[in-house]
Image (cartoon, rainbow, N blue to C red):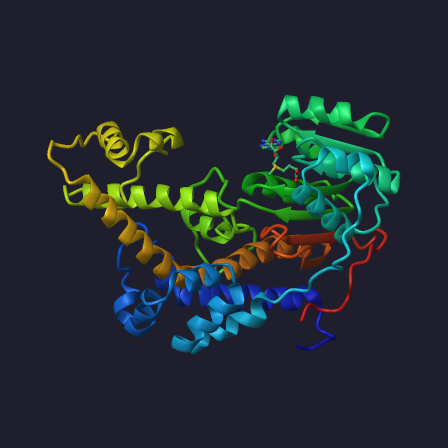
Length: 409
Ligand SMILES: C[S@@+](CC[C@H](N)C(=O)[O-])C[C@H]1O[C@@H](n2cnc3c(N)ncnc32)[C@H](O)[C@@H]1O
């Protein structure tokens, strides 16, 4: 990479290359093995599918949480996918997270506290009043108000969280605005303020970006999450040169990486998945398409065991079972399908981080093309939160706050 190349040029190139690779291999990630037992790519790349299906459970578990290893493995069968490596490589900001003050620490659970410290370190010095977007109880804002002595406005629509945040603020210069971030008037708060959003979902952070541009906010730092939380059935890219079309459902893929759950939680998650797959198979045997959706199943239903669970679900979905079903055989089918889904799903997970970075680049480029200097980086390791991308934007007139001028590797 040319070290003289402005970041925006590098980002625009990556945006194009990632979009092209995602498009060219859409057959590997668009169909979900949960609904399609053997996606068409399994025939086209039979050796890749056979390799995945033969993996041991422990290998599946390790691969599912390792974006680089997933690409390396896919690259053995589809060498062009190795191009993904440099395209998703981002600089990691200073690992030394800011220690949050005693008072914040007392009220914030461990992992969130560490995220706040890392995010605050990534933001750097604050020279403007702050607008904390979708603030929750405003822990981040409270920490920054103390750290930099700047007034903080925390916008949040949940009245109880606002009330709790106000109580915690005490004598800190932090006010809460109880408002819907999607209401047109909410972006008025952006004028003259440094906007901060730690884990604001789809439409909520898109409204923030558009509002920041409209009101020429001097600075913005955003860690996006839940890209799929949008009102439209399809994703509408922010840039005219976006070369990828995505449905809302496909946006889920970008956020499927989660911090490894505990063993008990994992067992419960696996059982819920296996039972749902058993239901899909049982229903498919009655001629219903596997991709016909059904409403979420209350977790409490599981307590009564599989036979009662599936009977209740079948009745609710209008396909009541006749007597004499061999439910243990159907449950075993569900577990077998789960093993296959977890393995074939690895071929989709290869594209999870590339898709997330493509979406983040769409946001960063939008800001760059509206006059901001931007940087896209990781503000913490994935074990703290896999939603670890930080988009930093500064109006050129705004004081520069630790935004490196060299391109990311
Ligand atoms: C994932 S939480 C993040 C909270 C906080 N930034 C943090 O990192 O702890 C998202 C927050 O957005 C708030 N929220 C959801 N929809 C909103 C809306 N339409 N307007 C304002 N806030 C909203 C939720 O109540 C929640 O507090």
